[in-house]
Image (cartoon, rainbow, N blue to C red; front, side, top):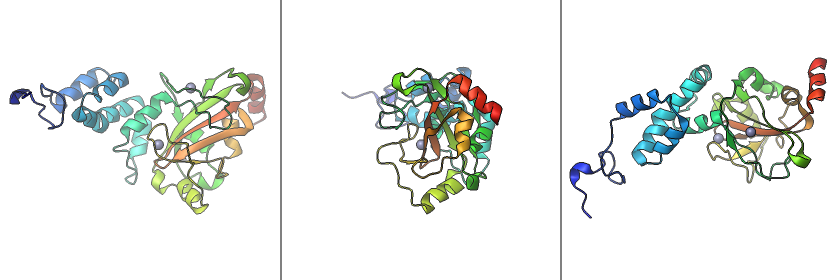
Length: 248
Ligand SMILES: [Zn+2]
Ligand SMILES: [Zn+2]
């Protein structure tokens, strides 16, 4: 059927929209008014390629800047890091606990991911996840999302984070220098890139466990090629971890 020309999408010949679109400025104002609501951004990006493009380029970026302004300023402050094009992944990282697949070592079963209302990310915390030689790197890590009473797995904690300028980080260099292999199955839940297991690379410092209140040998985390990290640990019972922090 021939669609009258004036109703065709004005942005792309392949677009399914038949009524044309609002201007980019109008979309910006509407979503600003909606405080960059992530569910609506996700919805609108499914409408057509043009909306998907504006979501990736503008809306997710503004979402990140509004939810974590200081962190975003810092991540962008180095010219060598290109967050551009990866705003969607970063936005998901801010609001999505990835759970874990069955393959991860401390979990006997699949624990589905879920959205979280608000998470604190800290680079002071991130430093605890870096081996001594890599402490000049900047890594933001969240507080653990606690999944308590997971049957035989006990209390599990999931955490996630992101490196600043990962392409020039000491961690990436060390992984490559050590010939660390990319994990065969575990992919980044945020950008779908391949990952390294930091446990396999023997790059998990003890400080990570004390930071999380986790058992010493029950932690692993993965870093993807784009510098996102996500991990799992087995949490100490509350009373034990209180004692552990008193000993520090
Ligand atoms: Zn969670
Ligand atoms: Zn990633």
